[in-house]
Image 1: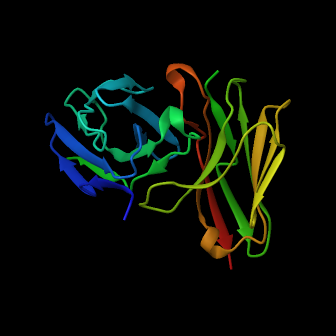
Image 2 (image 1 turned 180 degrees about the vertical axis):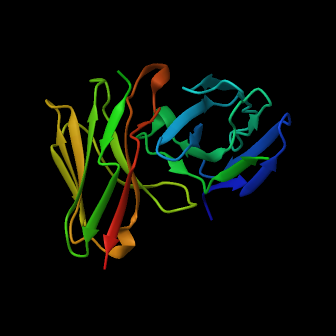
Length: 114
Length: 115
C-alpha cells in the first residue's frame, strides 16, 4: 500500500525542547517537502529536498533542521530556536524533476507546545 | 513575485449551487497550477491541476478556468454537495532551476455547502 506516513499524529513539547517529526514515503519519489500550516495562512514551505543528501531552505526555515540520508525518509527537527512552533506540520513528496510537479501529502502531525 | 492570492476566505453555498474560488499570481514563470482539497485534520489531496497551454480543464464536477494574460485562475464546483465542504487551496509552481517543484500556496478558502 503506497503512500506517505507521518508520525506521531499528535505531539506535545515543552518549551526549550527539540522534537523530531517523522516522514516516510514508499512512492519511490525523489523530492520531499515539509510545510507548516497555521489557520488562515495556507501552507508555508519549511525545507525541501530534491535528492538524497541534499536539501534547501524554504520560506520559513529558521528554527528548523532536516536530514535526507535515505530516499524514503525526510525527518524534520523543530528546535528550541523556533519561537512559535505550535502548528500542523505536513510532509509531501513528488517525482521531482522527472515528474509533473504533483505533490502527495501525508496525514500531518499536530505539534503543541505546552 | 512569489505570491498567490486567493479569494474569498470563506464561501457558503446551497446544495446544488456553483462554488467559485479565485486565485491570482504574479510570477509569470509559474507553469503548473494545482488545486488541493483538505478536510479537517487531514493532509491536502490533489483535486485538479492545469498548465498554461490550456484555458480550461474539467474533471467531473470540478473545472479550472485559466486566464494567462490576467494571471488568474479559478476553481468552479458544479452541483455543490455537502460532502464538498472542505478547505480549498490553489497553488503554483515552476519547472527549472532550484525552484523546481516548489509549490506556492494561496491562503485557502473554507467552503461550506448547506443541505
